[in-house]
Length: 218
Image (cartoon, rainbow, N blue to C red):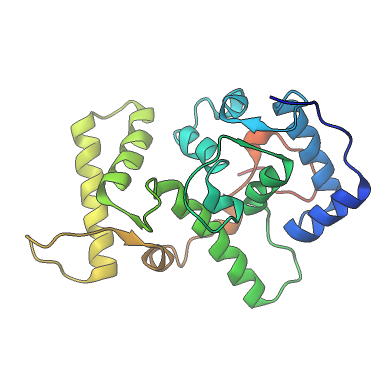
C-alpha cells in the first residue's frame, strides 16, 4: 500500500487541530490508532477497518465502514467514494464523532449538530441522490432487525414500510393511497430528529480510543 509512515511533526498536528477541533492529545491518540489499523502504512483501506473486532456485531457495520470512504464525509463537496484514505481524511470523518466543546455559541452548536446529522443521513442515502428512499430505509431497518434474529424478513419489511409511511405523514402531511413518496430529504431528516440527542449518541467506542476529553461510552 505504499511507503510506511514517517513521524508527523508538531506543526502538522497543530494544523490538523485547527481544522478539525481536536486537541493535540486527541490527534496524537488518533494517529496511533491510524498507524495500528493501517499497519503503519500511509493509507487505510476498507479491509483495514474490517479488522476492528468491536464492529463485528454492529448492525450498521457496513455503513460505518463505507462512511470513511464517502467523499461527502471528507468535505470534498461531491458524491462518490474513494478506495483508500490518508490520516487527514481519517480525521475529517472522525471529527463527526467529536463532542461539542463546553463554551461555544448556540450558532456553533447548531452547526455541529447539523454536521453530525448530515453524516448519519449520508450513511442511509446510499446512492447519494439527496434523499433516503423507502428502499434505502427498508434495507437499513431490515439489517438492524435481522441482526436481532427474532423476526422474519417479511415482518421486518412490513415494519420498515409502516415506519417510512409514518415519517411521510410527518413531513408531507396526509397522503393519498396512490400517491408516491419519493423519500426523506435532509431538511425532512432534521425535522424528524429535531429533539434527538445526537451529541451524546455519536461516539468512538468502536475505535477503542482512550482520552479523557473524548466521549467513548454510551
